[in-house]
Image 1: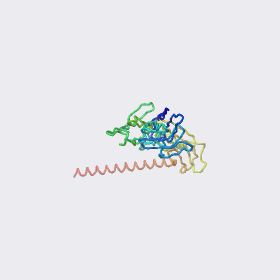
Image 2: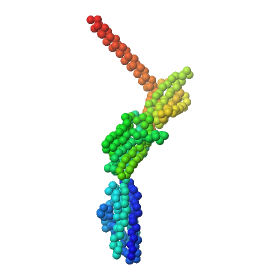
Image 3: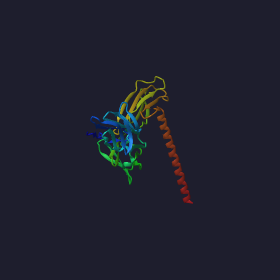
Image 4: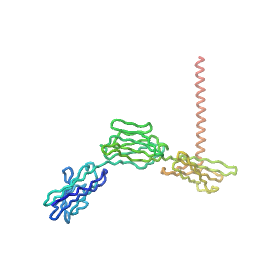
Length: 343
């Protein structure tokens, strides 16, 4: 009798943390009886069972699942691939009367890049892009590149066991397994896609891309003027990214002379200025407020129509007082200097 074992189906390279299926089969002839099937790795038994109905499992590793136990085939699943799972697995059929028949399936384990696929920051803030490799012992260098809209790549910084290279506005932490690219005071020009690239052995180069969006918070501006007709034209505007939504609070009185008129203007830097104009009856404006909503703000910005002008008047008054005090100080110092020189 000839007993031929079909080698286990070659397992593909699998990423750390994923599940993996392994299969093994045997061809038997009349008179053969399979008493036991075992799966081993590094001489350690992972699974042992006696085929039949029902299947009797005598030993089972917690990370191994018996997927299927057919008469001439065995299928197992590694629930979570670990670094120690790299290597060759043996499936052994104990066949009577021919003895042991075995096959082999070799598994290669690679790491995975963990990153944020897309992230959003606010202009003017410190922005950090994290990136890590699940098999840090294999990393020899980490490199960060920026990809602009035309597809051009610019190296921002790199770190290896021997050296650290970075640009002025960008800092890179000294860690091969958990890399962080930090951008000081992010601007709209920093809006782009960033590639973290791990140079590993023996896995080769592993990379991932994070696309950064930079938002600009609004700074509302309000003003008003009295028209020759006696009506008051009130304006509220805000430049931001993305654009804002503007509302008005008129204090409960029906003082409007029509619905607000909205307009927008797009700028080359990607921001948008939204403006709302409304005509009001001549009356007290102290309780008229502009309300600005922005997606990145938990609460809207509320600006009183009269606050802006009042603040400007106060600012001008303070500046005038400071100038007068400075002139007085200069005069006194000059006078003292002349007097001392005369003496």
